[in-house]
Amino acid sequence: MMCAAQAGRRGRSVLVLDHAAKPGEKIRISGGGRCNFTNLNASPANFISQNPSFAISALRRYTQRDFVALVERYGIAYHEKTLGQLFCDGSSRQVVDLLLNEMRQADVELRLATSVRSVEKTSDGYALTLSQGAVRCRSLVVASGGKSIPKMGATGFGYDLAQQFGLRIVETRPALVPLTLEPTMLERLAPLAGVSVDAVASCGKTRFAEALLFTHRGLSGPSILQISSYWREGDEIVLNLQPSVDLFEELRKARAENGRQALQTALAAFLPKRLAQLIADTEQGPANLADYSDKRLRAVEEAVKSWRFKPAGSEGYRTAEVTLGGVDTRDLDSRTMEAKAVPGLYFIGEVVDVTGWLGGYNFQWAWSSGWCAGQVI
Image (tube, rainbow, N blue to C red; front, side):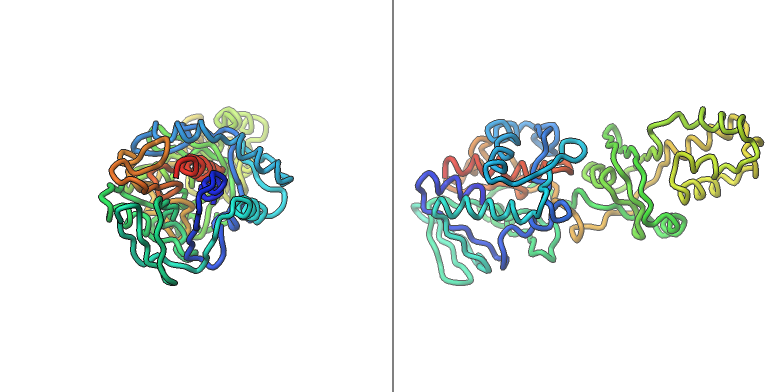
């Protein structure tokens, strides 16, 4: 939609095809229905790609400030949450309506519930066979997204089309996705379902400090969704469940001031009660805090600040917010998004091997890459 509006403003005749019954459904459901439409801190450092420098041009030419200015021009009220995330005060439909209005002003035609059956290269462009008729065009832009949330119609269409024309695909996998646990650990953590705690999740040298949520399937919450994009099967994840205090010193102080209290009582001053109880039960220490040596208190601190585990897997594309990997950026022009070896063929947004962090970054990549392609198609 962003690309189409830009091209239409340049006087191009533009047709948008969408196999869904309504436009912008992923926008509608995003941000709990309020659409986290960009991030004030968006920069190339917030994106994952086999070629991290590919996104630099687009993100610099159409920035988060540019999209915020567009939102403000439409009078859409918004607010900043944590870490630079911007959300609509009202409904995410306001962003969908903004884009639809931009397309209307540029005389863009939108056809919904229309599938593309085949695409063929012609001497002067492309010929498309549709579920309803056929169409020919000089430029073809693929903005089909990834495989995430198939119940909303997500497919691998864009990847198949890229391969049809000889472009390479970086292996895809679910990203920004909850992680699952093996049955024994899941059973042990079952009492924690619904408990949330601020935590630091680490995998290798990558770490994220945000909320963590225990679920009946495993672990979720922003810190887990973020680290899931970097985790691979067999990798260990380390969780610091209380990063803001010196837990060892606090437990020593509690031991000195009230040694008759139980460990879980002391821990509950810094952790949710159910989590404090689980850690105390796991430690199987003395009844009273007074009977804990410094060595045992260090062990308790280690259990809280360095909990190590290997996820069994992820919840997959069913709940993944985005798809990691995609059309190989080596085959695309970073300024125009055009396929280097296939004139007139463009790939933008999530279908490309550029994946943002949680927090509005993937929308910004959609706006930026779409804007860039819209300047040249």
